[in-house]
Every structure is written in structure tokens, then in C-alpha cells.
Image 1 (cartoon, rainbow, N blue to C red):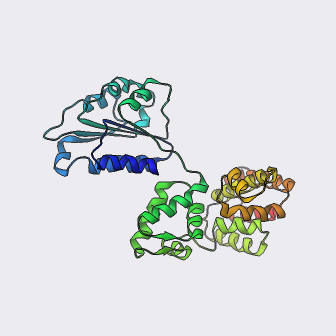
Image 2 (image 1 turned 45 degrees about the vertical axis):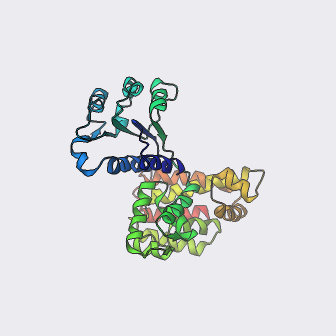
Image 3 (image 1 turned 90 degrees about the vertical axis):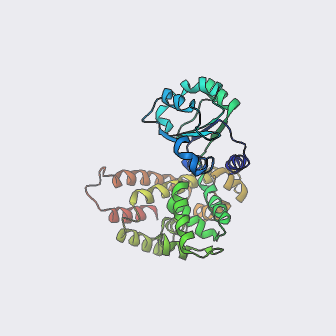
Length: 333
């Protein structure tokens, strides 16, 4: 993300602001910036007296301000990092007086995860004038495979398109979780390798042939034999293939297919934009649309919602997840 790189570049170049207020739905970038500041702003010998980590659930705004107003000891500046600051959401506006007149020798980092700061309030305006406001936004699913590719590229690796899609399908949009898995691959594979679905299967444990990505594709093609094989594999490995995840992904697919049927423009570029998917997947929707007319798709979405409840124990009469998967496949195809 360009904004993150610019913030870190400025810090490297010695342009350090007195306040970094990091907020938003995606924790990965918040952790990345705060971790960089924690590791790099002070020399190791300065950190003992001049670096402090506080936790929002354990402190008040007065505690934060009190620590921020201290003077550094035998150093040019001190660093105060407030993690889990979202626990202070009811009182966070009380930070406004400090933000209006921050201590120039303190670097205050506030990690306000999963929350937004109201742009209409005084605190937002005060921090914008004196420090850095960074909003970490969740990526859409169609943006994640490109993020994976760029992340690996920065480490000296590449990845096949199918490999990136496989990771996205399995890991979702949780960038911290994805990053952890990429670090595992980096540890075991030689530098400059291209990461393939086979590597992912071997080192992460995601089957390249039996996964939700392949199941969705098989169902879209009405490939009963392949879909049945995958369902049977899921039934034998329920821990790695939870029913709730399969139902959720199929529900998202058929909901998007319903949207596809409602589009006037079915050109690949228009479809990718409207459904917020990678152009790589447009062909799948074109195939599925031929196999499942709108009325059929509406019924499938209804079946999926019913199956979601059954998978959570509502009205299932203790039916196994394996049998529920088979029942679902019959109702869809």
C-alpha cells in the first residue's frame, strides 16, 4: 500500500511526526506501521528508558497524556505506543487537548483497530494538523490475490495465478493470516521461486484439487462427478473443510451469480467491476449463468441459507455435516 510505504519512508528519512493515529478495519497495516516505529525510531540502548507500550483496556486518556508529556532521558525523543486503543472509544475525544499541543520530543502511536475516527470531531482535525492519520481499509476479495503477488514480489518470489486464488479462497481477506502463511513458504522455498498450488498443498496443507475454489468451479460447470469427489473428500476431512465455510463461499458465489443475471452489460470488464471480482473469474460466471437460470439461482440461495442454519444445529436433527453436504449438492445440481 503506497500510503504505508510513504509513512515508513518518511520515518527512515528522519521526518517523524509527534502523533500517529492508526485506525480502521484492517489490522495488518496498523501492526506494520506501529511495529516499524517500535523497532526503528529509537536505538536499542535508548529503548529501556524511552519506549513504552500501553494497552487501551488497562489505561485512561489521562494515563496516555501523562506518559506522552514526559521528557526523554538521554535521548532525542521517546516513543509511546498505545495498543488496543479501541477500548478507549468512549473517551478517545479527550485526547484532543494533547493533539492540539503535542509534546515535540514524543512520538505517540495510537492503534485504534476496527474503529473509525469521526472526521467531524475536533480530535480528527487536531491530529490532521499536528500528526499522521492513517485509515487501514479492508481489501475486497478481488484485490487480495494482487496483494499476495506484490507482497511476494517484494520478498523476491512470484506466485502462479491459481496459487494466489487458492490462498485467497482458503484464507479469505485476513492479511495478517495470509502474511503468516507467506512467511512459512518463504522459509522453506528457495529465493526467486515461483510458488505453485503444489507448494501450497505441501507446506500449508490446502489441497490443490479438493478445496472450495475447485468445488465452486465444478458446481458452476455442473460437473457432478468432480463435485461429488470434492464433497466426499470434505466429508473425510471435516476439520480442514468446515461446512460453515463451504456454505458461506457458495452463498457468496450464487448471490453474485444472481447479480450477474441482473446486469445489462455482460462484458468481462463490466462484470468484474460490478461484482468486485478478478477478471480471471468472469468466465466462471458466464458458464454458471448458462447452467443456472435466475429462478434456479434464487432457489439455490434459499437452500444455502437453510443449510447454513442446519450446519449450526438448527432443525438438523443431528444430521452429520457429511450428509448435509451431500444433500446440498443434490439440491444445487
